[in-house]
Image 1 (cartoon, rainbow, N blue to C red):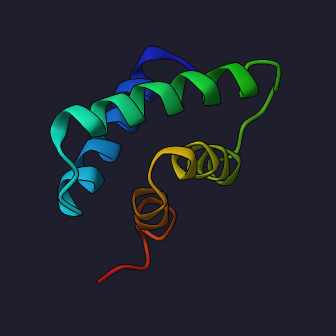
Image 2: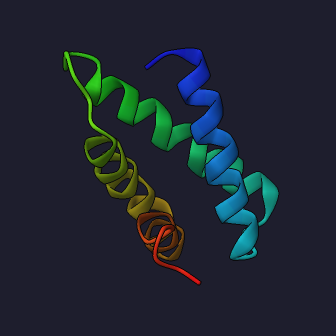
Length: 79
């Protein structure tokens, strides 16, 4: 993933973390570790769909905070 994509994902994830009341420091740690792992796992793929990316991020976030993972996974469905 390029830097622009990572920055955009980080901003989006921070907004969702804030929405569920995660402390900023914890959210940043979860996001940093999750995106690092996702980047490693997807680096060999030629094409990455948005669905692939979301699935990989959710899988990593579940390790740290299942609620955060759920909110991010359902971000387009929450009203």
